[in-house]
Length: 319
Image (cartoon, rainbow, N blue to C red; front, top):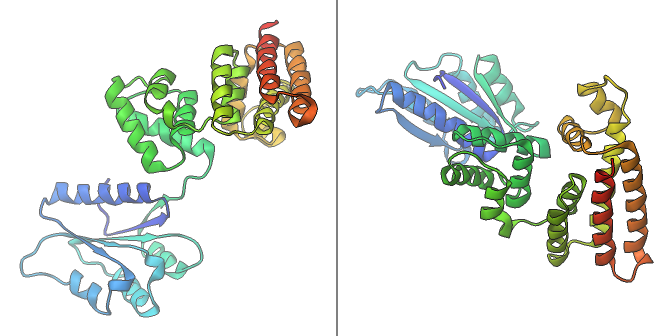
């Protein structure tokens, strides 16, 4: 990453922010190994501090000033920063980190107007974004993982990006780069909170033994039967929705029509390859019956769920 006189990092995803700052510092030190890095926070800054740090030094040397939480600058400090960026010092790189949002927006706008290079590091909140992050992280370490494998890892490790990044690094180092479900299970299954969606995916994809194993684990760890059957129903309805979509519809238009994110449509389209229309209709009947049974119609909800999973797998294979 090249070093600019002014860089504005906007967002609140800490891992991505730290990496971006680290890349800027590394680039600066590639040009000058003696580059000094100084962290600043509004609470610890006094008027004139920025001018002092950016003034020419008798000893020379480059500096990277990292201004954290720029949205918290008071009026006087904000004016000082915005005044400085109109005529930045030649050997100083200012990196301002702003959380985004309305607070301190004038600072962010002023930095952008002054020509700051803007880098977005927003919080990763969507499932599809986490899957993309995991795949990119595995590639970053020289490995490969499928979208399904990435989702399995997210299900096992959780949503914290630091933990996901650490897991990706370890898996690539320990597997030689090919990260599959077996490797993920070997390292992380003990930590996974199996959800009803894990059970549903295995059943819909025709993996009976795996689906039953995940079902028993989910029940053993306290997942309510009603949540599992809900996940089964959503999975089968997804097959019906995507399978019944107009031929030729794709991309954003299909996502909008079906009310499903594109990554999920891609996943369901892959799952559909093993299904017929009659099989999907049978599975819809199965989940409707299972729903009634786990809500009081059956003496043993666990048995009702095992039967439903078996019948869904059977409906898939009856082509």
